[in-house]
Structure formats: structure tokens, C-alpha cells
Amino acid sequence: MQEDFFSTIGEIIKYGGSTFAALVAMSIYTTTDGFFIGNWVGTSGLEAMALVYPITMIFLALATLFETGGSAVVSQIIGAGNKTLAEKIMRSNYICAFVIGIIVAVVGNIFIEPLLSALADNPDEQHIIDLAISFLRINFCGVPFLLTVYLTGAFMRCVEKPSHVFYLVGSTSLANIILDALFIIGFGWGMQGAAFATVLAQILGTAITFWYFKYSRQKFSTTWSLGSLEYIWQEVKIGAGFALATVMMCFIEYFLNATLLHYDAANLLAAATIANIILTFVYLPLNGLDTGIQPLISRLFAEKKEKHYLRVMRYGFFLTMILTFAIYVALMIFTEELMNVFVAENEPITPEMITFLRLMFLLQPFVGLHTWLSGIMAALEDEWRNFVIALLPLVVEVPLIWFLPKFLPIEFVSLAYSAQDLAEAAVALLLIRSFLRSKNLSLKKIFA
Image 1 (cartoon, rainbow, N blue to C red):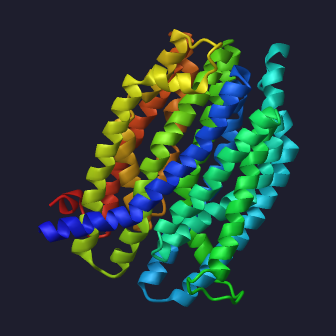
Image 2 (image 1 turned 90 degrees about the vertical axis):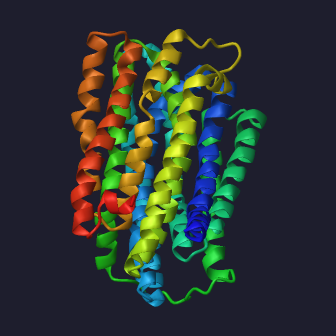
């Protein structure tokens, strides 16, 4: 029993730990922009980042679609012993992702100005809108390269090289930090400098991807034969729930921004940006732990090693919840100190901003439970339950964001996010019971 415990923890660390570390690096990548913009562009830059965030969530939705679905399908096929087919599917994914990325870049540049300008209720807010548009016009150009980097991380885990994910993402994160400092502090390019740094770092990640699959010691076929689009469609069905959840976040953030501007609470836009940066920094790695072990569960399930994948699920749960509570305690105790990292010394942090953040973090422990449950459903190729969960924001958050400011101070609007965290965990817990039964499993069996 003790040997099984340590060997399973070792596997989780191998798969989930490297992805966890990689997404810590990716979080630093995201945090870097906020740090440099907040301290060298100012609060107006943070307010513009709040408007930028919903749009960039669309990029993340596409990346999540390919990453989650692709890793599940490819891992299953590798587990079944068909490496040649797996390589063909990987190539098909890269082509589809790059083409879609180009389309998003073109369409985004066409519609971004009218989309954001619609938020401005008065001329004083136009400066924030202009900063956001200048950032996004450049950032859209990096979408094809962003999708490539995300896919590569997923496929490195599939071919049992999860530690390489850290080197890939770490390299792009380090490049982004150096370029941010050079362009924002050195050249004084402000928001545009942050966007150029992001795109160039993503291009570097794509170059590393090309080298890895063509010239590294890994044994990959160099032919250009592709896998059937049937597998791409299967990936879309698996990853659709996660992608839709991210799109819902995009819509919610856009609606929140419009609400804050409507109530003349532009200072809370800066607080929203800081909240998003903090949550990205602490919960992207959390998601990385569960995402990292998904290919392991998929492979073990395909190989019919029941005791083994049940142990991975069980220990994955305990690690996820321990990490979640540790993060939660830090967030609630050090809220103001975390905000000070992103706000210049000469610009005040108001009590309303602190209240906004703490109410948003209030029920964060439920995020860990939802993340673990959704990860299991994705690993075992669930096709619709995560999709149902992704629709919850329309039922919970949208009405609350509209309703709360009518009766409470505007900073209490962030309670909508805590309510959503609780709702997602509760619904996921209800839905997974029927899903596990369809796989001849149960929560009781996992924790036996």
C-alpha cells in the first residue's frame, strides 16, 4: 500500500507537477504585463487591461479547446498502441489551430474598435478605450502562435515528456519579461510595448515547437500525412465544455466592465484587472495540476488498469484541495499587499477596491472541487456535462451583476463571482455521478 502511494504520487508529480510548473511560468507571463503596465503606465493602463481581458479570454478558449480535446484523444490512441495515427492527428491539430488563429486575428482587428467603443458612456472614458484598442490590435497577431504553444504543451504530456512543457513555457515567459522591461521601461512604448513583447514571446515558443518536433531527439515522423477530421471533431466535442466556459467568462467580464462604467466606477476596473491577474497566477497552476494528469488517466483507462487510475484520481483530489485552501488563505490575508504589487506608489488603493477583491475570492475553495471533477470528465472523454456547466454563468452571474448594484454598493457586484464558484461545484458534483455510472465507476469507488 505504501509503495502504491509513493509511486502514484511520483506519477502525479511527473505529469501534473511539470504542467503545474509550466502554468506557473505561464501565469508569470500574464502577471508580468500587469506589473509593468500598472507601475509604468499607471492606473489608466490597468483599467484598459480590464477591457482587454475579455477579448484575450477568447484566445484562451480556443487554446483550451485544442489542448483539452487533443490531449484526451491523442493519449487514448497512444494508450491503444497506435503512435503513427497519434502523430497524424497531432499534425492535423497544428494546421487547424494555425488557420483558425489567422482567421481570429483578421476578424478581431476588424471588429475590436466598435466592440470596445460601445462601452464608453462619456468622453473621459475614451482614453481607456484607446489604450485597450492599441494593445489588442497587436495582440491579435499572436493568436496563431499562442495556439501552437498551447498545443505543444498538451502533446508533450501525451508523449510522456511533461517536464519539457516547463522548458517551453518557461522560455516564452522569460522572453516576455525581458521584452516587457525593454519596451515599456526602456523604450517607453507603454501598452503597445506590452503587446509587442507578448507576440514576440509567442513567436519564440512556435520556433521552439518547430525545433522540438523536427530536430530534437524525440522520434517523430517527418511525413505530412494527416489524421482524419473525425478525430478533430471528437476533440472539439470533448473540449467544447471547457472552451465554452472560457467564452462565458469573456462575456461576463465584458458585461461587468459595462456595468462598472455605467455606475462611474472606473477605479474598480483597475481592481478587476488585479483580481484577474491574481486569479490567473494562482488558479492557472491549479488547473495545470489536473490538466497535467488528464493524459495519464486517459492512458490508464484505455489500458484498463482500474486500480491504478482510481489511485491517480483519488490522490489528485487531495493534492488539488490542499493547494486550493493554501491559496485561499493567502488571498484573503494578503489582499492589500498583493494589490500594492500592481499599483504605483503615487496612486491610492481605495477600500472599495479591497472589498471588491475579497468578495470575489470569498468562495474560491469550491473552484478546486469543480476543477478536479471537470478534469475527470475530460480525461474520460465526457462530451456534454462540462458543456452544461459552462452555461451556468448565464443563469447565475449575469443576473447577479445586473441585480446587485441596484441594492448594494457597486463594489459588492463581485459577489456574483463567488456565487458562480459555488454553483459550478454543486452542479459538477450532481452531473458526475451519472457520468461515472456510465463508466462503471462512482465517487465511492474512487475514494474506497
